[in-house]
Image (cartoon, rainbow, N blue to C red; front, side, top):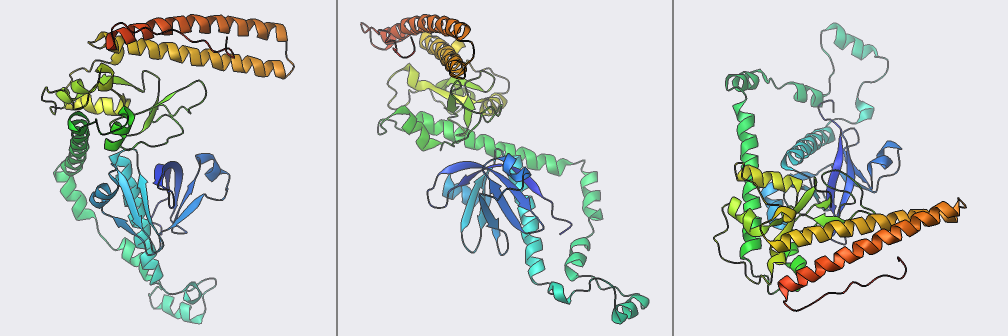
Length: 389
């Protein structure tokens, strides 16, 4: 038990009845041989009852290669118990390895503990005469499970690793990175070469290649999603990111394929317009693409090569400004309902309404330009919401 360590962190869990993926806070308890999970990390600190429990007695870890073939999820951890098979997804390969190592240690200790004598037969409390006789003879009654844990000598392994200068760990990490990069190339290759005409929408096609997770907060900055912040699904890893420029952006899929050396120049099947080639990727996947391209840059949507990319990025910024103004109007209304000074609040609401009208006019102009690029001769007129203006 002393060799097994407790561990906690965020993982994405597959549901038991409804096969949906939900983000949960997991806590590994080596003393009780269980893996508890909560809705958020605050519940574990106030000693609340866990949302669920994974019993690790008589459990075993499924090979990561098998879990990838079954669930098509990177960094997936499979735990097979007598009652159920659990599937958990870690944010990256390093976290997945740490969880698997900690789970295997607890499972190994639990299996050895099941063969140990019952606690009622173990010596405890004040030693009796028999115990005193054994101590005088230089013998000590130590449970066999502890002897087996500490009996292994790691000196030879440490000396061998020291001679190589730590090359073994670096080779292991480099092989893990190359495996992640290969999965990234495979997904981009599918997004470029699979026929999207058999799907009802662009999102449905992209979701068929990479499954989307329902994260309550941004995978990069951990900001929770609310009324004033929109969320986007990364088309390369499936995680959710906010609309902040530092957390992700829209890029041309063909340019990503060129940098990853999987794009041969032919247009993707079923590509209707230039906007279908734009995909959102998170900052982590963006860094992976930069690493694979050996320093080459990716043109973000607002600095892209096409006029459509620039118009679409500008429209997204205007939409974000409208959402922020609406949130401030809602806050002012709540303050009026609480009995605060109404004159100042009404003035602020009028100012925000004027700003929203201005944003909607800009959005109408941008949408008209986008419509002309896709369908020459078609115009778009702004529609104002009576409840907002």
